Amino acid sequence: EQSPQSRKNFKDLDNTDIDAAKLKAELLKMGWTVHMAVNLGLVQTKKKIKEFAGRYAKGDADCLFVFTGHGIEIDGKNFLVAADSKLDYESEAKFEEAVKRGCLPFDDVQVAFKNARGSSAGATVFLLDCCRSGFSKSVDKSAGSFTSRSADSSAI
Image (cartoon, rainbow, N blue to C red; front, side):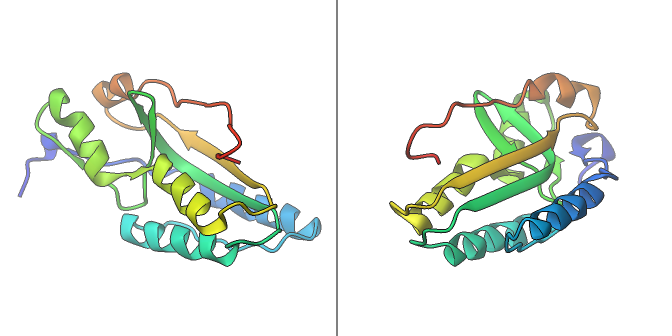
């Protein structure tokens, strides 16, 4: 068992469920089909993304993927923090390894949709509403800014 000093947990974000419910209601009003999952662990999140991307495989429908929660950026790579993500590390030097082991690379999400949709005529839009605070001060400093990238034709 690890000491409390080496286990870094994330604070609950009170508004993410509320924001997701409000967005769902607005999308339903506009005629969108909405598949929503909240507070999933890392394994559940990976399964749900694969399932969701598969629903829109090779289709002409537009697809909107929304993530609200914690996010971390390391060396230009974005990571989504699942509800059960815990970063176990003994030193700041091990922080990057802990993030890669305990969080979901956003690149994996994009690849799942790209592989499922192929050259579909429908657009895939990713909306990330990520909080980058709520960790220890040392983690906040390491996290940097969440990276935004301009989309190329393979990303949308």
